[in-house]
Image (cartoon, rainbow, N blue to C red; front, side, top):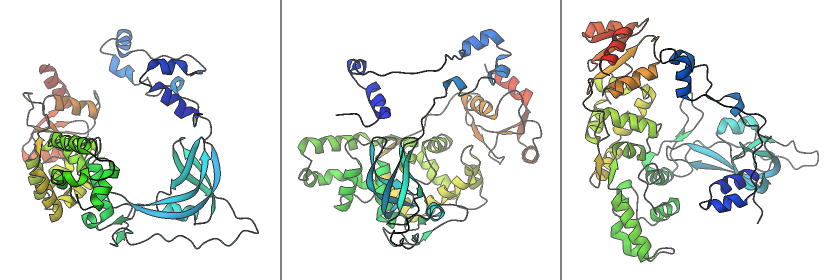
Length: 438
């Protein structure tokens, strides 16, 4: 059977478990020139240890010789039959175009994202239109434009009106000011959001429960076997009924129950990520887990943070990488009683392990703030140095701050540190301190 396209053929060939299969396939690489980048050690030999930081920035992250030439994306013409509104785990309403199947670059395309209501209005896309499509980056199908109808074409359909209520639960769908996405306000009462959150909960980077994929989650939800994340850990009570379902047997059910049992112990950061809170991806989940240390402390501090102006609210918003917008989403999640009930129910089944912290360092348990312009190192380097010594790094000064590093033009944070009597160091003093600690 012929390969669908060169991209898939090459990628599939390189991923073969048997290298002999790869060797038999006539893959070729065409390069227009040689290129090289000195290793870090070689740079240090050329510039010396002291001059290395100053000269390092002359090397690009993506040097020109390493940039690939890509051919223009293949395009096709087809008919848009319908626009469906899908509801995601955070309540986002996403329009999806259903198309007459058409081959684009070796792939049969039947659906394409329309992104949001502004995109639909801008392109004036309507059911029944003839449209031009391509696969963005040779991957994601997208509608480029509507092909103008000919003089003998039938009248176009009425303009598409984006719904102001959720198609899954009927709750009001609102569009926050300044955002492009309309969201369902139904929360965990919306079946679409419940299912998508459950799918996210068992995904690879969350609880990673082998054998419990999207299809099984949807089927178990429709059968009433699971409704909340905690219900997954009650599935053993339905083992016999699951065993009678198509595609399931005694061994597969036993494997599923063992996989669920193995996930009763989970790292704190993976647990936070699994909850599917808006704007909390893997990186932010790790930041929160490292900052709060334990599940119990996290819940307690976030409940206190619901009070506007509280120290806990200021602390949450000052965590480097979190900020006020994400803090608002976290507080909103923890302010819902049904979310707290879900957490309490889920907690009873789990052993949530503490996030690993740097212990024994000279700044262990201390909160450090950097302010002003640093000249000998970047803010990211300074943060990494503090964290290696056990510190938590914050973006704002409060009563919980232990040390403030003052760069040039430190401003209001320096003034507040003085008012609160917090210890400070200038950049030279910070460098001396770090050097003394090895």
